[in-house]
Amino acid sequence: MHSRFHRIYLDLAQGRVGAGRTGVAALTELLHMFVVLLREAGRDRIAMRAAMLSYWTAVAIVPILLIGLTLSAPLGGGTKGRDAVMRLLYDTILTESVEDVGAALDVLLSGANLTTVGIFGILGLMITGSQLYFNVEQAYNDIFQTRVRRSLMLRFTLFYSGITLGPSLIAAGFLVTAALPAQFGALDRALPVLLTSVAFIAAIRLLPDRRVSWRAAFSGGLLSATIFELAKVGFSTYMRAMGTAEGMAGIYGSLAFLPVFLIWLQVIWMVVLLGVEVAWLVESYTQLVGNQRRDSLDPHSSMRHADADFGLAVVEVLGPAFLRGEEPLSLDELVVRMQSDPRHLQTALDVLVAAGLVLETEDHRYAMARAPDQLDAGQIRARYRAIGAPIGASPDTSLRPDAGEV
Image (cartoon, rainbow, N blue to C red):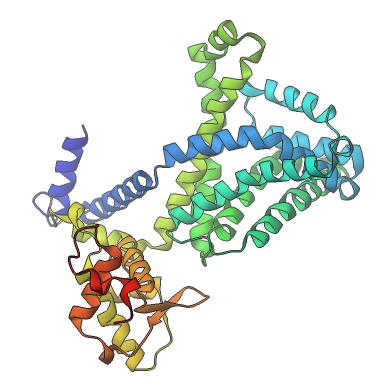
């Protein structure tokens, strides 16, 4: 099936079938987008990441809820605020098939008290809970092909702010909604869906350590929210039709809800990461789809990589910009100027920075570290190979970085 689709796609992309027909160009462009999305999702291993995030969600959900609800209690309306937060959590995340998870969480949270665990216990809970945030943040940045450069203190502060302010805002929203006249009752039912959409959009906008446009954030966030609502219905229907819950109960007994919950978490994170991939596609549409158009005509595209000659090509763009007195260039600007794959460019820039040939500014822009007329092509290739080539590919060890400046 895969090879058949691939042949059809290549025939359309290379104009062997349907050339000149109405709608064929639009279909080919849609296929380019679909192939890019599949390729990027495969490279980012979103199924494996979803499994990892499911594990950390299961581990961290109780510490996060315990800390967040306890520290935000004075702002959330006390017991009513806490009940509102938990109600929205269940309405937003859980499906009918995992409703027992809510009862289990209530039991765990009601029997836990931060005052009894001590300062080191609280610190341990916060470290455990923060691992979920750190792993989610890393996943978003990997998909958007950028590195996390925020300090650990800033990242921990963002996590702490989220788990304390989030429950307070949720509780306030529910309390205000409850005070509205009866004709506004639809707002109460729509709040879980609205909150899910806002959360997905905000995460795409804020978690990557780079600027993400609102257009990309809305595209990915709303898609995730839509699929998520459909997944809740579909998952429950599937579980009932296949008798999965009953089968699990026969094997695991009273703990049957746990494996079902883990499967559901996997579905949630797959939906979330798919939305992030769509946001990345929208954000870099011109470069990603443009590269795919060229790759569809290039039988050797999968074997191409950022070698020393490609590094030299990057310097040939940065060098004239340096001599003209231009501001340092961002990765996106280099992608536009070179019409190249951003992954290849990021790899080449990392090597050039490590080799001391290019400087990276605090706002993640790039410029030559020295005047380009002080270097020749042979020196640039040698320094690049010393850093970026496999061991054994650079026979002249005198050119390695620890052997002195070129």
